[in-house]
Image 1 (cartoon, rainbow, N blue to C red):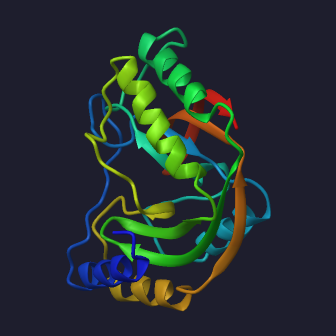
Image 2: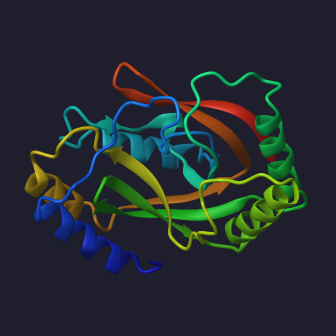
Image 3: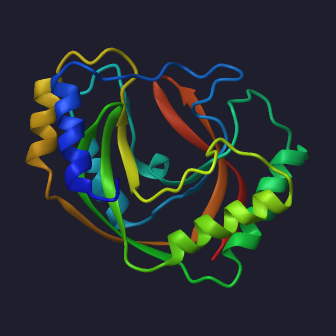
Length: 219
């Protein structure tokens, strides 16, 4: 799935065929929206993505912007409503992440292309160096060395992206949404320098997703 053209074509076909999926508000033990390792872009590139996301016709869905925008490095665990700061897993995630980024330069990614997919809308993240792939491998190894299992189950991420929209209800305007994505298919938001990796938790408040940082590791 490293080919965004193929990914985009499949996403368009899925939505137009009425096969969209959607997320539901988080509950204890759910396999979606639990703690994750992410990298959040900053600066003008985030402003440009946020401004565009604000123009999408997606009532009732989770539209992201600002500091909610992120590249997921690894999904770690099912959703937990209360996680204390001294939680052993939380500390273990942080230590593994610090080990993974140690000595590496910031990751540079070009954020370009708006793509529909089964569960929402995303922006393609195109690495301009090997840092993301290196961190992915090193983080997986650091978790394994600590005996920590995650939700990736050996999955290799060869498609990086930033989500603009997650569907949170049955999709009622698939054709309009696909047309909106088509109109912005070639949008180039610029290159982001990802200087920090984080372990985060996601919280739904007032119909919007918010990111709560747990642990940080600087490149």
